[in-house]
Image 1 (cartoon, rainbow, N blue to C red):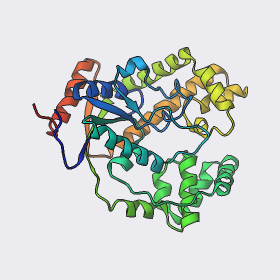
Image 2: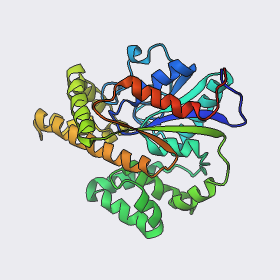
Image 3: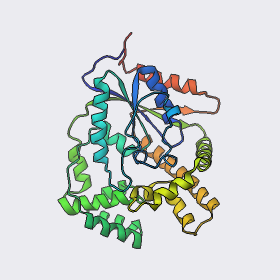
Image 4: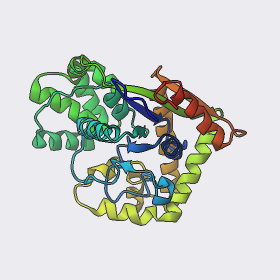
Length: 319
């Protein structure tokens, strides 16, 4: 039974793609009477099932899952949107006496939520967004990085230089509010977090083991129909989400006759491996993460056992 605490207890299962986060989160939920809340910036979108590795009904094992498969890929969805929805979801799950279990590899979502980042509203300027997006298409994302660097060098250094959506948003915030994203973040950290979090990270003793899992997952996605799913999603007008998502954007040159299918699939694998490396770099910076390092001799029961030890140490449960 879970103790009622001043702060809301939250488990967060983090780590790179294909590391087994979703499976672990489900098993934690089964043992703690919890519910799963996704922290994946692509699993939120409708129609993008195979390429984002959304858990199937069988994989959910009857555990309620939230914040999956609800957003329109053609509409903007911000970190602030996620934090607002996830905060409501956590409160609702906890109010029913259930343990909220976050799971995902979108580090910015998880950090912003658990640290209670307060987002200052800045006006949206669709015309400016289009102008900046076209600039990135013409001159490459480096042009946006250079512009951002001129007034907010910290954000220019912090944001992934290939993430055009976030680069555009950082420039838009400054242009419409006169306040840099860095200053907004500084102001936003003044409110204390309402959460008592137990962060559990998954990694592998041998990095090649993770890369092999990624390669196999991509092959499985292709067998399950990723090609057709990508064709349908990319054909929708204004589907900016798919153009940003690994597994979809790499297939666009194939559909345009620029790559062979084999080359496109290999690029998906390569980009996914690179993404996993960036995820690990992000989460490794967070000293609050309790890491489970998996080697080939470790079975899944041992992973669950280690995770539960970290959770029970928090003192949330009593007999």
